[in-house]
Length: 477
Image 1 (tube, rainbow, N blue to C red):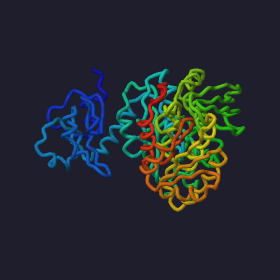
Image 2 (image 1 turned 60 degrees about the horizontal axis):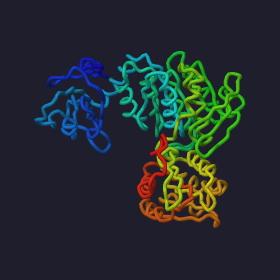
Image 3 (image 1 turned 90 degrees about the vertical axis):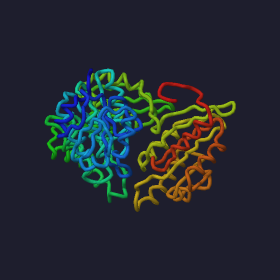
Image 4 (image 1 turned 45 degrees about the vertical axis):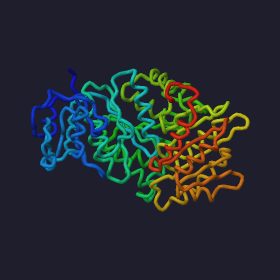
């Protein structure tokens, strides 16, 4: 049996105390009692809302092979009879285990941060590297103080490429995470107005993102967006942190991985990139200039991690957008078809503009409309009114005829849109979902975009459930 961890290695890494008869090893690690697999270890982490210790019995019933619990919580588990590893603090124990996973690994490690495009870039890296070796990557957006150590702890010893997304909401959050991950390549996709409620400027955001360089191994690389106004700051920060190799991507003429030309299409795109003195035509199986820019970062990071350039480029043609990040649905409505673009996973001013560009490039058939369904951008703080109202200009420029809005902050956009745009506003997302179900029509191209916390994903779900999928192409459904 190829264990993820033997019990003896678990005990040693976490400085744990065994209780009961431990299994020889575990096949996986879970912090969710509902989805735990048979033979996995359940880490009873205490979160902001729930305490995993309260669900230890459910984890056992669902197949957990061993429980990792806190010494202080042991009396509260009462008569629960199960193999356990008792530790001082479960999250700290998982961090120690994650560090042990990194210590034992010979994998090439890539870490990705940035205000926009982290998860998409991480998934593109997973896609292009998977044909070249055993890839281990973050699940969903597991990029915070528990998601990163959990992803590390889950990394098999035989991994060839490890890909980690590292996020933050406040200064100082990336520093401990990058020091755990110790990447060979650190990518900063962009610096944009995200989490503005916690920062006073883009420079502060750049400084927080630059913490990722502090974990880069000796001889490692930084990959930076040369089109960013913060490029020089980040370049200096990387050098100050001891990163000896700094590489750039973007349309800037000085970029090492340069976007020379871009041709956007509804379902994909083609770019011409100047790399190592040669211009290459690159097909990408997802639309949007922002995706093309991220693809250059992916090419840089993957090749710096040892991948062959031609194979990386070939793989980009077969990638598809993910759920909530540009995934397209063709829905049957009457005798016609409705195109639904799902951008509901997250939003900030930069990603909103990118999504509006996707809608602009999607050409509806005669009689069809471009419809933007938008929910609030969260964590904008005192800038909320201005950044929401500022979306009026790109919507008008994109030729969006109908704008349907939900949420208190979107009232600012409602008031900023000109009379020629048909505007529908509902304060609550579910009320807008009910309206959208009856208002969409055949020929429409509908894009849903919001911060995840608004619940606008329910609008996508309602439309997909009401109108059957017309096709089942790979990456959709």
